[in-house]
Image (cartoon, rainbow, N blue to C red):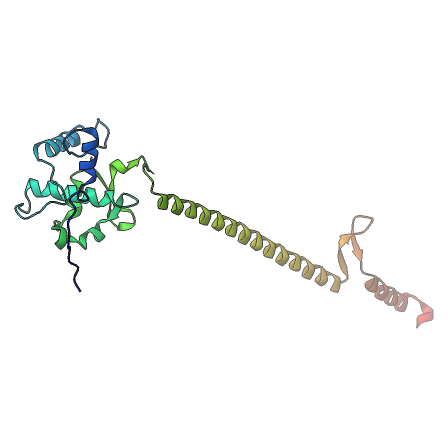
Length: 231
């Protein structure tokens, strides 16, 4: 099965960089999203951004040579545009690699993106390389949230509340089970002490209370030993 593009609308083939530049009435270019104290990174960014013209990701790639600065500028613009179209402004580099042939992406895409820290943030959390568009975030907070993102965040908060309530109830149930086991243990100990004629509760004199059956047995033994009439 194949998909054929029957018509091309140039109005839709406008990148986020070009749209922003048109609104600000400036030439298309990337935004440096790191503190000014990153002097060397800023110098490299300005050299890359100003000395090489911006290439739209919707333009033809034919005349560009692999490994050239123009091709690098085009790949950076392509990844920037792809991330701009996503909800979370980030994507797995492995997933981007699935389109390496169609987009003419380099083999070591993560190394190329690491060379542009002012534009992208590359995370290796859980040993999965993920590229994040820096300009899409303010700190760790997504700036422009799609309504679907808002719904997903609320759903995530709800799931956290449900999980917290579940853990609280399970903890209470475990404590109740332990309490019942302790009560059974105490009852077993009392029954064992009754069998030997001693109750755990003290009598009025502060000592252990004698079992009634045990006292009756003692009276019979004393009567047999010391009462002459019982012989």
